[in-house]
Image (cartoon, rainbow, N blue to C red; front, side):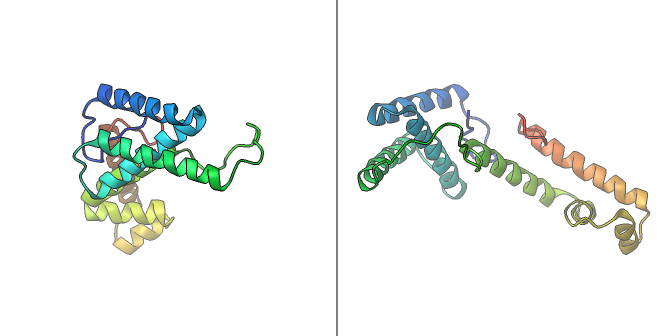
Length: 178
């Protein structure tokens, strides 16, 4: 299930979120009578909720979601009238793009990791970014900073532990599984 809370918030009520998702799915399905397209609209609704919440507060998430879903259903019917489907493609042709919930998960992880990097001690952050992101060898980083190579490796190890801990506090892991 997609997490609908903004970064930094605690999951308010998982039961409420599940009920809202089911109600939203029923709302969309009754209008479309197409389960697959309905699920796509629900996913798109949650993506828009997430993106909107990143910049502005929402007083009533349920009302927001239903309004967005209603507009997406109308857009769906407008597209259908403008471009009627030609032929249906088989299930063996998979879309190479990630699913909406994967994109949302990646965005959340990146935000958490960026925040963790910002609060990391400056020397540790610099060493980690140079080693892991820029690919500079330990010996070069150590020479540039006037340190021992073992100290550089310790900083990298601690930085990774800090990042892992930041994700684990949110119930996530580095590998991508929750």
